[in-house]
Length: 246
Length: 248
Image 1 (cartoon, rainbow over the protein chains, first blue to last red):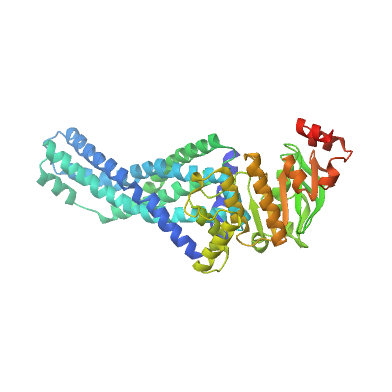
Image 2: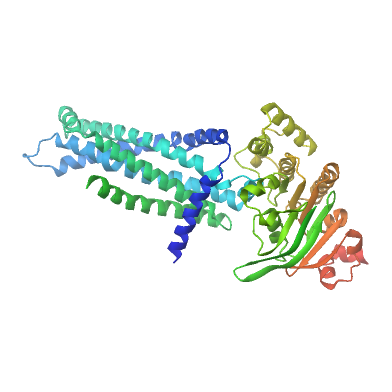
């Protein structure tokens, strides 16, 4: 029953975001600010994680394909497809669930417990729309760029690690990343990214918006935001894969 | 004028306010007093629409606020300014941006007009040189003054203050009280203050509503309150040694 109650409350919250919109000019500026906060400030961590993901995938694939019947360029192919289909959209969005999700929940939660949201309501402003919609639009728009960066940097990281450590010649790796490339895999990754970006922002904002109490509860909301977002990302990763690729 | 008519409110089966009726008069400082947990904050939140009343209604100059939806309430909300207990300034904005925020969101003023209005409001609360500071960089008293500046930026007809002196030293409390009284008289606002600060009650109480156990227990002004003959009110007013000595 509690799950159903929370589900109903969540959908009412989502409905309230768009029911009473404020001036468009206000949203435009806030979206740009949020893009900077959510996207630009995450480029560093996304790059770092992607380089090492690509490097580890490459080296592990080499050591698990010790078979003369399997051509070495398969390593490049595996690294490419693993990064594009799964690791870049899913792992990077899980990382963003931790970084961005906790930030959204704690920011909105703190505004709730310090009566800043009440102040917005009393002014006659749709507080949920004003606070959440720009974050949602910004995350949905900027996350695909982060994931594209991750794909590129991850594959490059695999190439650098593979060639520098001498486990795979550069020619084989490059042949592998060009072999039988399916552009739809990138489209599939983008679809997943957009869905995950919506999950992260909406769940985290919901947790923050209904925080009650003080700093302890803000921390709890932040933790719940990360846990629920991560679990839902994994569930929807399976659902989308089943629906689109199966 | 704000009229509260037969308002009742409860949470999870527990009655917090029972059948409260009162008139908050225009151009006066109206006080709501009562002990902790008496229901005065719930009453104020019902009056500004943060809580919906279970029974009864709130009227702003004859307009039934309780029966309106979000859109219908918007014009009345724009006539309301509120000073929160913790000031509720937006952390990510400077003092200037905080005061300008309602103007930007709710008015059609040009940037130059908004800046002029912000300067006027900040000068009115005696904070002329703090535009670029963030809330984390100013004192509690300054935060209250910025919050007052923000509350009056839209030239409100109704001003609510939730425990305006909490966390302030006595001298700063007097400054804030004086400021609220001056603004109320100057703009002929209906000011409603929720407080349990006895200095404020004595110095500002033109129309006092005392709430006890969620009920309207006593009404009067600061002249009447010292000899009301009401046991619960006397227990509340004369709880401190200073007030007991004053009574003697």
